[in-house]
Length: 110
Image (cartoon, rainbow, N blue to C red; front, side, top):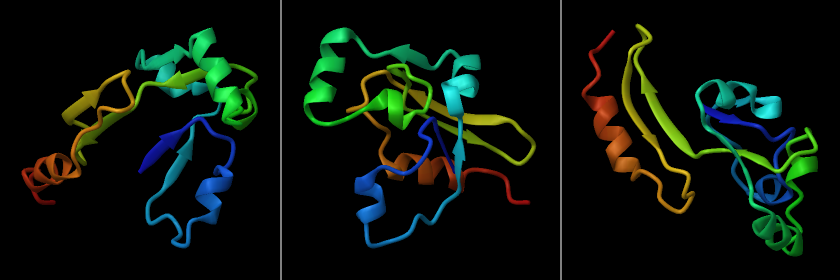
């Protein structure tokens, strides 16, 4: 499952040939991410760069702000226990999918 503040899929996402194979929950206004301390406002110099590339976060997120959630991965088991967390404000550093798969393999079966 993915949690996103976007009000809709981006044009690039809708042009992808394959439909999403996972559930997307909308966190309009970043309220859930904010409760976990995972929201930041994009600095003004980056706002200008985003705008030059046609990236309109205030419209895409539907809240008129340049706030973004920190990219994060939480693995939560069926009992609600958090088994792994990875959160880094640098969106270029993401956990390897193999790491997530390994955490999932170690979860107790239900």
